[in-house]
Image 1: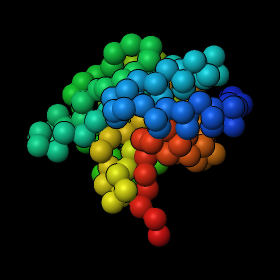
Image 2 (image 1 turned 30 degrees about the horizontal axis):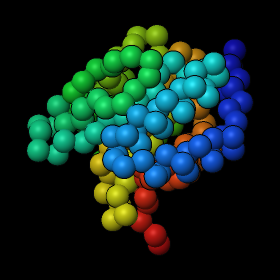
Image 3 (image 1 turned 120 degrees about the horizontal axis):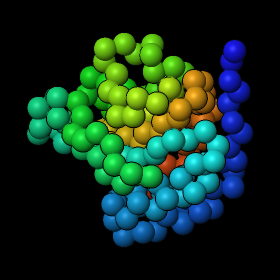
Length: 165
């Protein structure tokens, strides 16, 4: 049986996300963004949300370090072989309908998680400095429209600046 994707009202977050862009540091913007996301969507199929920041000087197996997150901690550091690393390296949003499809490369911080959305956070030059990662205990909780909306909110918050083409 296919579970339906919860309706998330992203439009309601546009103005608060834009206000986050005025905060003085990336760390403050990450904290505020995670709090905004969690407050809005914890009741709509989201089990965890947070940022992983790239530490390119570290070995690939320990390259991503946990930053702001809700509701609690997760695995850290993690390698670039998982979903977060794939989004980081490719610079592309990754929507994982069922994490079981990822096989041995999947990093399971919470064994109850069934789907995932990972949005890379880019500099104006198009280099990923980290990712915003969202998990759900439901299969198929996210789709491409969630990825697009999340990317837009991250841009409004000053945390994602894709290169202009």
